[in-house]
Image (cartoon, rainbow, N blue to C red):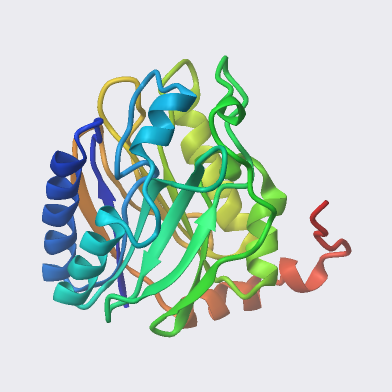
Length: 262
């Protein structure tokens, strides 16, 4: 089975972002991808957002953005993951939606670990979610969804693996800065190695952002890596590969601790 990373540089122009995403999904589908992972905040991204602006930009799950993504997924018969700001009570949620190849909403993951680090405070603008795994079947694999800063928390990945994931999809807007690109790759590879899963880490590119989306196999080898420009990378993934790696490296079977959300 083929799975794709689709990297873009979103702005606050929703129509332009959707146009860019549509072109990337079409490219990935033409290359045989069954799954396309777009970045966090694909719908709209502002480098200096405030709470009021995010509320204005937010949309419900039956709004224009998700409806358009559903049409894309249906047109190309692929599963699409993409980040958005979702209308949700007093403060919006940082949400990744999953649209199945029939265009139906297969699920929505609301970010658990908000980015209160490196001088930012995402929790001042957005609501944190209660941990609840989103794991969906794609072919013979099961894809677990997390978002950006979640990658720094190994228990989040293990939480999804315990729920059946053998692929971790990580839509992100990984901010640029000293050492940040190294963190991005090291953490993606670590999550793959320690869980013997594929990792599809799809980040935004452009000013202030790292780009460098990468796909990692269950042994930690980098299968594909993009640069700092928009683009698509398509890789092969299989349940057989996961099984073979886990037979050689049965670390999940040997573990002595469980992950219990608090």
